[in-house]
Length: 412
Image 1 (cartoon, helix red, strand yellow):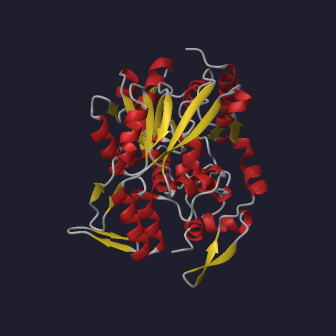
Image 2 (tube, helix red, strand yellow):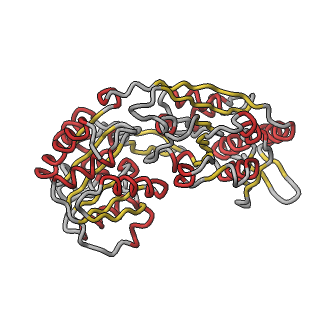
Image 3 (cartoon, rainbow, N blue to C red):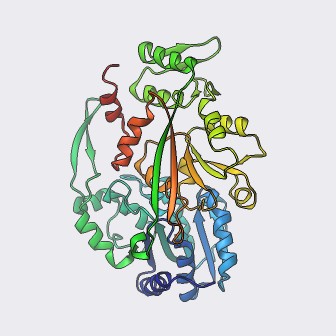
């Protein structure tokens, strides 16, 4: 295969950075071919054994890229959740796909700790961080992505808190009557300056992408049963059934339950889940009959509704089956928003919408390629439901938070 000119250029620059620092961060926007680029960096740097850490649903796609490229090194591709199963200590490169998933602060996430341990076991092997969203919400998210390698630019700091003394504008806010330290206001200029020699950033615009994403909201009239349950929950904060209970006695629970109910499903206090309204699933089936589409859902019970409505002959959740057949695909938003391509879908259809702005911007871009000039994305919202309010927030690059929900539902 032949890499695109910008991939060749980035790979050469990346190999130089790896040679100097042992760490490279490819902060390239989605659909720019980070996988091919990272493998070319490994090839140019003489890699022998590469470990590629990614999301489970992306494994087959990355394996396909490796098979197509056929670089002269061995590769192990696995998901982050399986790190504890890795016993080998002979990797000279570790590639961390979607590295922003290690960015939690002020304390490191389990994932960040595991990757750090793995890098240590492999004698501080060379590291490639890859992400389309290096700082999804805060520049403070930089620290734990780099901390996994012993040669990181912040290695002189014993932990995040000491690093924050120099790189974060700390403040306090009151939560449940207690004053809590807040570390989200990282100093952009200072942080990005410290990592600039490790990072290569590249945008779709720089690569020549000119894809137009056309979004359209379609409204579904939910059943009278759904409307009745929602009204009772808003009024009483609890709905008792013969065997199960829907509880919204705190703002967090109420927000979650309304989010579920307006799309026709619910998770009870017992942890059981149930489809109470097939209106959305039936609407999608009828509206897009005979069309190969990619469907994003939020809650597991929504997949139940889709599978029952479409049937196994028309819908899959397996990417390989989707690419090899005429079936449409259903993916959970968070697990499907990164690292995969749905270029074989005619449309993207969102059964529901996530509270995260990152989910909005990444998931809607799953069909984009440099050759595809137009993408159509449909949002399926319940008439009078909560989805419109969430949509308004995430389009403005804001997460739909509890504070926004409280303002939207002051009547409660």
